[in-house]
Length: 467
Ligand code: SF4
Image (cartoon, rainbow, N blue to C red; front, side, top):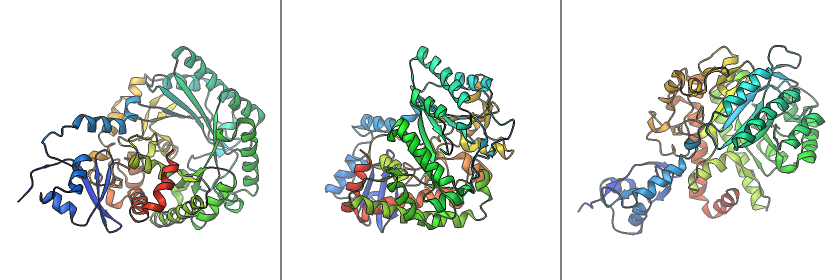
């Protein structure tokens, strides 16, 4: 006889020869073979599995679950980032740069280039616009090119923000994205005075980092810069990001070891993005396939380090695990639904135009202004609630996108209209042929497979990463 219960919204998939159920808030259940069919056919028995399905909001004995408010509160918490609107404000201070990276995604220009640096007026208006955002904590991030080439402009921007902060009462965090090649005392004084975090870029050991930078001495200078910054500001104020160049794909272990050797506690295994010079990469399909393999090899090595007692984490996995194993949302703009563009990040370009994301302004450098929202001289409302944003908002949630809406991994993934547009020609995108989908899916499934197949070994390690 059929049991009487109601199905609540959930999706399912098969990973590591196991059936996986995921509900709307990202709770995951690994269930015995045939369970999904039995749930749908109302052929469950009143055993522990049945009780778990009820307790975890996969099925309900009543049309409206008695604890629906609890479930709603949990969903609200997962989407908490929407409450605050744009928190990250990127200031593209200049396109000038003193390096020559093979994969440059920021369309940088030579150090002596003219007409590609922000004016004081644009900086001031950008700060005004940033403070119109309702977010209780604002992050003002300086990018380039190489922003440290213009310390006076950065000081000016921070001083304007500090004036506003004092009258406004909100917290403002400052981040300087720099290659650390020429960190002057003047720049470090500013960082010290205003607690500016330094985010630098290091692609691995010397042979790899130098090859990616098109220089022979870049590694040496970056390491010296990191040391200098750590000494002046403290280790915890200096972080580094790596980008996996085509050459880097062959060196997962060396890259991890380099970061561990330098005393970093984590590493973000980041793939190239198809923007800027990086878009000249001839074969993205091949790159994506190799990146997935690279990621797994590097990740296995990171697990080995942890088993040897070295606390070292992988940042992309932390984001997925936080969504999977905790009740909280993450602030990572590339894996959000609704998408991070506008909702979590805005970009003020050196020329006064405002873009939906860092990638949007990189498209603009190639002559494509699809994600230009307005200018820093416009009204805030026209920039963030204008027609362009309204159009993008139609397709920025993976809960409503074909391919994503019934994907079991959507609670851990995100929507990316800019990437869809740049790689597939339209903002909506097509999931079966999307390489971003392929990469995200492969990595999320890999992390789930570790939890399913090697639970005792990996879960204690993952828990230390989430502390
Ligand atoms: S992009 Fe791919 S993996 Fe992510 S939710 Fe959509 S279909 Fe799933």
